[in-house]
Length: 250
Ligand code: PGA
View 1 (tube, rainbow, N blue to C red):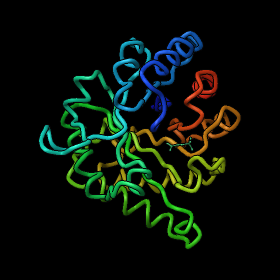
View 2: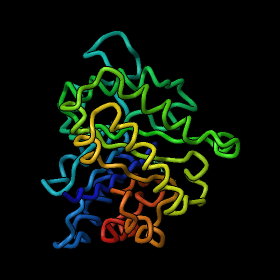
View 3: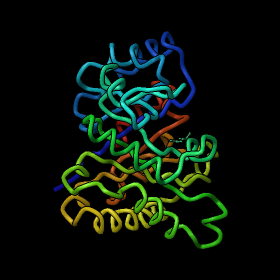
View 4: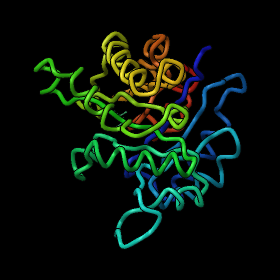
């Protein structure tokens, strides 16, 4: 059974609601009717309404983070229920920028993941090594640790909605892309961990995306790798034309 490709835009801290509307107006007509890839756009929270209002049924909408509690005194956080109410279908969890700058740990990734699953949001869980770890030969260890931590206490059935994004931190926003070979090797390590945690059937169905300087000109070669089930796109998702080109490469 072939896995449907998933192309997700991570807008990070870019675009106001008005800029998001302009993007959607330009982007939607560029989508080719025959393109089968699943598309998700993850704007900053204030632009969720604008994206969800324009998205229709062809495009999913995702948050970039969520808190594991339903509500409470957690200034600056939003819950899974709030994302659902804002018409989100997806949520990014454990992005390396959250890990690096905001103290995200394997344990908080796990808690967020459980709350996303409970709310029926489709999670995109990010894992990936930093340059020093790769140079020290620790890539596989890091990926295993992040996967084991993220997947703890989640059943095979619950795991069916999870997508994982392999994002080598040295490739994010740097213009350095992992070769399809490097990505495919990492994806095999991740799929093996998913198999240990959830069994072979769930692991086989799990989509593993690549992220890190995906651009229109490298999307095709990455996407033609059997192990690469889509992309999580930062910088190149901000421009409707370049994001549409990446979607059509899938
Ligand atoms: P980039 O970001 O495409 O700008 O490298 C990817 C990401 O951080 O998800």
